[in-house]
Image 1 (cartoon, one colour):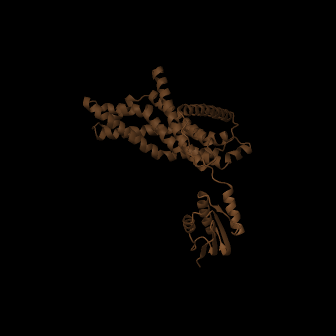
Image 2 (cartoon, one colour):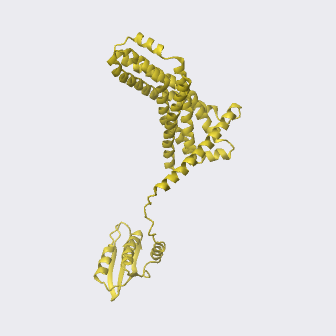
Image 3 (tube, helix red, strand yellow):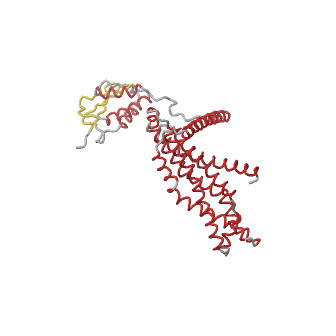
Length: 377
C-alpha cells in the first residue's frame, strides 16, 4: 500500500506561516513537495516565522526529514525562523542534530597549487627519504643472505621450489615469444642495411652478438619485471594490508628471511637460465629472416653465428641476467614491504615495483657496458 502524506498551509498571523502535516510521510510514497512551502513563503514576503502542526501525522520516516531539510535550507537562506516545536520528538531531534554541525565554508576548497620551490623541496625530501629506506632494506637483505650462508635463515624450502617454478617454467612461454620476435626484428632491420653492401651474411653476427651479449638479458629482465616483480609487490603488499607480515614479526620470524630471501634466490637462479634460453630463441628468430628472406644457407648461418659469438659475450649476458634477477626481486619485495594499508596502495606498490625494476635494469646495463669497455671485453 502506497503511503500518502497531506500538507495544509495556514497563516494564523501576518508574520507567521503554519504547516499542518497529516497522514503517512514515508519515503517512496506520495508526499507533498517542499516547493509548495517555498512558493507560499515567496508570495508572502512579510512572513518571518514558520511553525508546524503534526498532530495528524500517523507514520513518518526519512521522507519527512528530507522535506524538512529542504524547507530549512530555504528558510536559512531567506532569514526565516523555523520553529520545530510542533514536530514529532524524533524528527525534531534529528533536525537539531543535522543543524548542530554546519558544513565548513572551506570544506570543499580545492587544493592550492604549490609553488615551484615548495614542490622542489618536497621532492628532494622524498628522494632522500626513499634513499634511506632503500639503504635500510639493502642492509636487511645483506643480513638475511649472511644468515643463509651460515645456515641460520628461517624460510621454507617448499616455498622456494614453488617460487622457482613460478618464475622459471611458467615464464618460458612469454620469454620465448618476446625473444623470438626481438631476434627477428634485429635481423630484419640489419638486413635492410646490409643488403646495400652485399653483406647479408653478417646478419648472423649482428643477431648473435646482440642477443647473447645484451638484448636477451634486457628483454628477459623487463618481461620478468612486469610479470614477476609486480606479482611479488602485490603478494607482499596484500600481506601487509592483511597484517600477515606483522604477525610474522610477532612470532619472531624475520619477514626478510621468510618472504624476501626465497624470492630473491629463485630469480637469481632462474634468470641466467632464462637468458640462455632467450639467446637460443633470439638466434632462431634471426635465422628465420636470414634463411627465409636473405637465402642464406642454414649451415652457413650457424657457422657464422658460432664464429661471431664467444664465451666472453655469453658470460657477460648471463652475468647481466643474474644481476637483473636480483634487481627485479629486490624491487618487487621492497615495494611490497613498503606498501600502505589500503587496497589502492597494493596497486601503487605493484606499479612502483615495475618502474623501479626497469629503471634499475637500464642503469645496471649502462654500468656493465662501461665496465666491459674499460676492461676491453
